[in-house]
Amino acid sequence: MDRPVAPAAGPGAGNDCRPWRRRGMGRALPGALFAALCLASLMVGAGRMELAQLTTFSGEAWLTLTASRLPRLAAVVLTGAGLAVCGAVLQQILRNRFVEPATTGGLEAAKLGILVALTLLPGAGQGVRMVLAMAFCLAASLIFAVITARLRATVLVPVAGLMYGSVLGALAEFYAYSRNFLQGMQGWMLGDFSKVVQGSYEVVWLVLPVVAATYVFARRFTLIGMGAEVAASLGLGYRAMVVLGLVLVSATVAATVITVGAIPFVGLVVPNLVSLWRGDDLTRTLPMIAAGGAMLLLICDLLGRLIIWPYEVPVGLTGGGVGGLMFLFLILWGRR
Image (cartoon, rainbow, N blue to C red; front, side, top):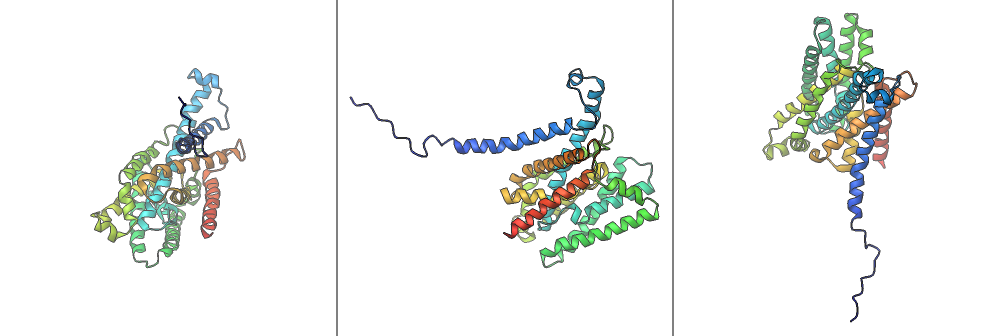
């Protein structure tokens, strides 16, 4: 009998598993990059850490790891993820891609709230300062949402946000100047992770439940981005969701400003990059936005620690430089 002849291998034979391989590599590479950045953040610093001391869970290296490096890593990751998620939520609420807490007056309002807490309640702890910063940020965000609702052209929203933030910033500086606190305010408002140590950063863990709550309501925030009429026709309480989103944003901004200061561009660049890649559905893109914000801030923090090692450049400067260049690239690339 004639043996059956195997079909000839065509150009596409044996390639059925390639899409799965590419998809697996696409998921593994960001995870590997994030792990490498975390490891680099733990190992880079002015002081050396001996691996032999780490294995014994004692000594100066173990103290440096547990009291400084691990808290700093947690603060960087949580701050980057929280600011990126805040930017995505604000862009859906205001229906504009050029807004974030730094361009809508949120950071300036939180700064004013902290100044009020420091001057009127000097003995108050971080909890009281965070509550006042959150209240001021929420009030400022609600006022800005009312202002933007009256604007006919959405292109004017970023311009109105910059003007609104400038007014709040001027009020904060005048208040600090009248209380002889201007120099101190300029020092602690510049984003800096070098002061993060065990016992002084724990308030930033509030970002974790905020991000989780944002993911729970991600589909509703996506519907808000379609407008009030579309959201209402789908049975969604538009105003209630707007207030909830602003509360979550205010809590994140207050926690990050109290812990590390102001860091610009993270909430502006990362959501736009992810939106160009994966679209606007927050149920799919929110984990990517959070991871992207964490990785961007890890890169900026490592740059600040390596540029003039063993000294350190505040992450507010490196983040502003890297984020500004990335945003400029997005604008020029979008024009093409």
